[in-house]
Amino acid sequence: MERQDDKSALATTRARIAAAATLADRKAGDVTLVAVSKTQGPEAIEPLLAAGQRVFGENRVQEAAAKWPDLCARHPDVVLHLVGQLQSNKAEEAVTLFDAIHSVDRPSLVKALGAAITKTGRRPDCFVQVNIGEEEQKGGCAIADLPALLAQAKDAGLSVVGLMAVPPAGVEAAPYFALLAKLARDHGLAELSMGMSDDLETAVMLGATQVRVGTALFGARGTAA
Image (tube, rainbow, N blue to C red; front, side):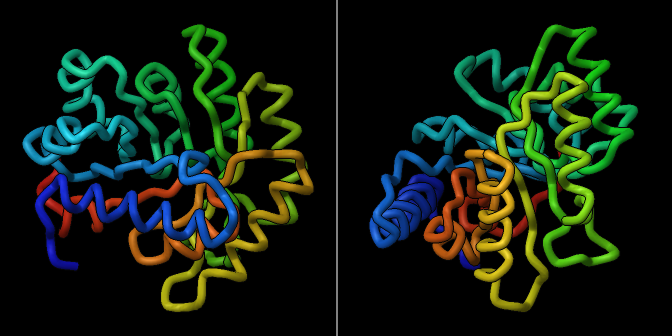
């Protein structure tokens, strides 16, 4: 995808979200754009901050810890999401740094996050990641395990607000997004983290409340901070 200038790329992405929301008889304001800034340095992030973007996503705790404290000091209204896989031994650092965690996917992580929340007093919003395509190589809990994991998360004191999924690559995403939306409804969860640069319109039309967009905003990946 060809890189636009930062302000234009942000405006284009927001317009795509708004158009899809209109088609679905939804409000654009009901969909949060999470600008996925993994591997992007402060020099790439600052223009989006200047253009008014305030919600950002990172894949790795270590990378986020290296670059975001200084950025957040200058922009204290930034909301930071962890959208990548989380190791249990990084749970406390993640709870301290992030406002939302999109990749809760196993009992050991639930336990670690619960302990971190108790210790730090911080309670980020959590999304349970579902392996919606039943792919062996992907993170996420199995669909059959979702009820038990949600119960464990509640017992551990996590603030589970919704579900997250990444559909299989190279196939139509709509059935997977529709299934995730049904699972969220079945479990009384209001938030859906689904949709990326290439399929955000489909996700918005099927109920996404958070879309995780990197390439459309930043172009090809840069060098990790």
